[in-house]
Length: 400
Image (cartoon, rainbow, N blue to C red):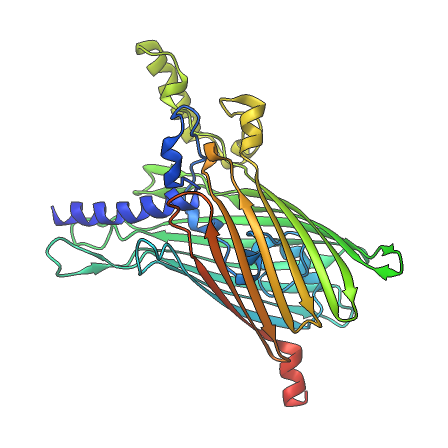
């Protein structure tokens, strides 16, 4: 009985996290149930933006200037990074309006290789803690978590274009094997990202501007198998496409305007409500559900472009949009703002975000704040903090 209650406590926290990460905002309950159909995945924490800079512009970063956290947004940008290397540590208290012990910590960085300034290696470590879950007799606590570690390589293929690839190991331990009776283990998976980045410098009037495009397909890999393989789930494979336009306002003053579009490349789970009532309809649904469970991730990627019950109209609803702007004074002071929109039928995540950053020779501190527009959203007032160390600045300090 104690084990069952512990599992229920963990399941309640996981349901809360998955509900928000997948975009199932509480206010969506007022909608027609037949319209509400979010995409279901495992390890949903992989989709949480880890850093304050991208989060403060409405969760975007496919084509913005490269920084230490590009591993999440678009790893191919590292080849165009201005510094020899950088390391960033980010922290996000998650769902603090509801609980106080869930958080995301992220460590990310890169290093440019060789003297030709054409290639870079990168790595990141993510740790998502679900806090403490106490068993019914309070004699032990369980600390469920999800984590990932990855390494990447990026290279310029021309003066304007680069590509990058990332290999990732993912582990999810929900604490189900924390007792002597239940020996089930955590679930693991492997995945890869592939990305591209194109940047050019057009002359508009008398000003040299920068126009960049980027794309990233993340978490292409195996399924994650919970409960000793009896409950396989798709990874949150995601297609991100974005553009960024930067123009000078005056000497040392720049403004960038940015846009990202995202779509989960995961097949829609069949719903019983989409089939005719009666035994025949239930039989058809059971077959469709079994096919969905047994579908390979690669097949699922291609199916995800045309399997929505509402056909093309619903496929368009699966695309979320981020728009944001960044003001930059001499690479020392930054102001940012943005907006994220997800269709109500696909999750109803809608929020404004604001943020600021301050940079010295060695380090940069960024912070962001989220203001949800969807009613009763648990993401409202979410804070993020990032601290970045620049290797070129460290070299100047130590004279090397």
